[in-house]
Length: 225
Image (tube, rainbow, N blue to C red; front, side, top):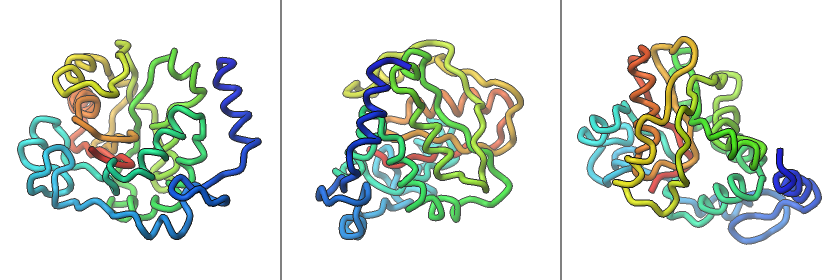
């Protein structure tokens, strides 16, 4: 763990938690701001905006090799942007635990208990050392809970540059061939990540999992867009 990540953790422990929406001290998202959040519609494709079933239209389902995408909010929601940023870049991974406590039961109700195994998108060793944690892993554990224990099914075999602000074509090129599986892959897998934008990373994960024997693969994220 780097000095920078240690400082982030120290700041997190010392500074009070304030609402990411209004700044009120107490929780990451206060009750008033929670009520203002608009949930995503599963009948709208999270990638292209067309009519969908389980979050993906037939075309995007085929191109990503995903059977569905479970995401509760649009990334256009400023609070969701701030939640992802504060966890990913400021070291506040307990914001993900808060998210899991508030919305985990909603995600779990959409899945058949005991039939799914949670996994997560891995990050490079360098980024893990810098941040001190993998936000996708923390999200998987926060949402899956005891019903769906998170397993380390994927490994990064090629380092990829930051995907932020890259267009779809570059994202696809960056992540191509970057993931492989480790161990035995179950029949039904839920892949967790913070945000689904173009679906390029999750597509690579789904491709690797299916090649290793997975029959059904679903994406689970905080937000989309």
